[in-house]
Image 1: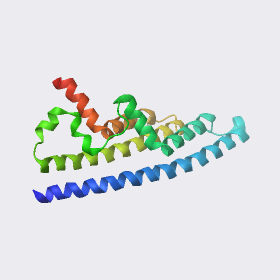
Image 2 (image 1 turned 90 degrees about the vertical axis):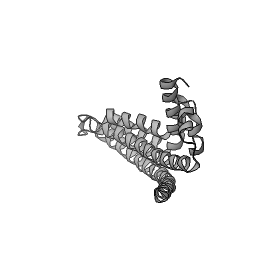
Image 3 (image 1 turned 60 degrees about the horizontal axis):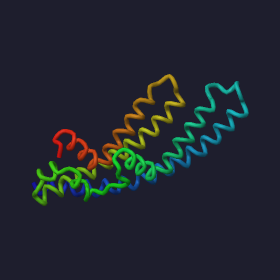
Image 4 (image 1 turned 60 degrees about the vertical axis):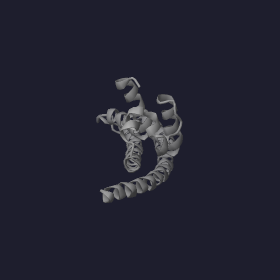
Length: 178
């Protein structure tokens, strides 16, 4: 059982590194999309109505996706403040949000394992947010496909996973009234 706890601890440490790497990649991808959207807007401006499938909407949405990727930490904090009333979250405060969950895990080793697993869930949530932004960008480029709904779903689910503590607290209050 100690091997399992050690594995969860290593997974938690890797998840934190993954979150930092993903934030850096989203910044670089946002810079690329900014340049790409400016080029696309120039191409649409030059060709006008003769631009085959290119339009101002694609350039604008690509620029919006670039801004969201560059400002990913601010966007995530804004979503957390808007939905959960909490600007940032740390894994140490996750269990404080739900008294029911807090009562289930009284052993220090179990709490450490749970926090490690929740750190991994947060990393998956951040990945979902970035993927959702990318899918929203694809929705403007390929209007015949169904990227908008799945992109929005990824962003909402990623936000719930990133703010797993407040989310569990809301569900706890709804179901158990505590």
